[in-house]
Length: 119
Image 1 (cartoon, rainbow, N blue to C red):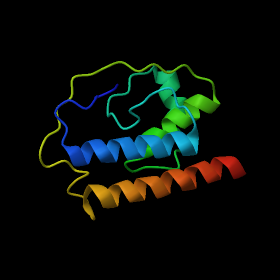
Image 2: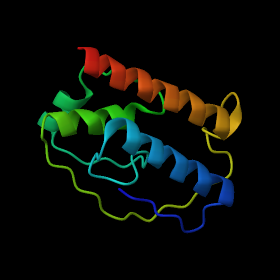
Image 3: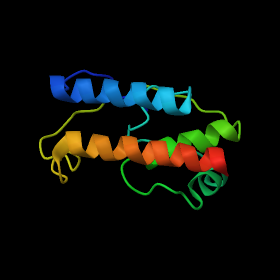
């Protein structure tokens, strides 16, 4: 899914843009612009393959799932979804807030990419 930016605050827009840019630099084109949209639709077989033994289990696991799809040449499509940001986001209320969580996610993705590169 792709949530777009409608209704998002400026801080969230900046964090989304920064994270998307970092993911593209670190992982290349994953076939979607919104890796963190919580809506993923796939067959059971694809899910079993992509989610088996993930290295990342927190906020950034979506990037690893999409990265696995890329290296396995599994087709990926992105469609717009109606999404409304709500106050009380778990990301915002996590330790360090949205900025702290974004930094942790970035570090996790760098580590994940290095693990795949080194085997």
